[in-house]
Image 1 (cartoon, helix red, strand yellow):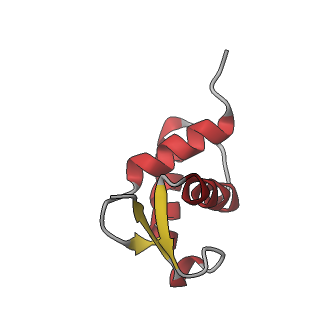
Image 2 (image 1 turned 135 degrees about the horizontal axis):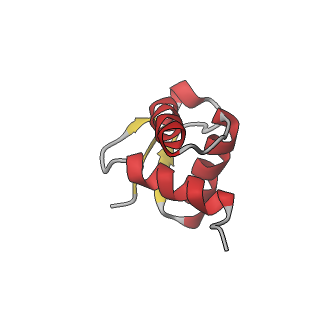
Length: 78
């Protein structure tokens, strides 16, 4: 049985995230490149939803308004 798409995206987001703060837009961009390399068709918006879910789950930490990708930052939870 294939892995659910949301799990794939969340795993990719976590793989490109860092322990230091980086712009949400950069995390989305890196995630998109990783998806393209793996042949996963997605959108920037779907990746952003995964980032928000990971923040709610406590796996990522955020500052700023996550809906404003260039004015918010995320990092792996210490």
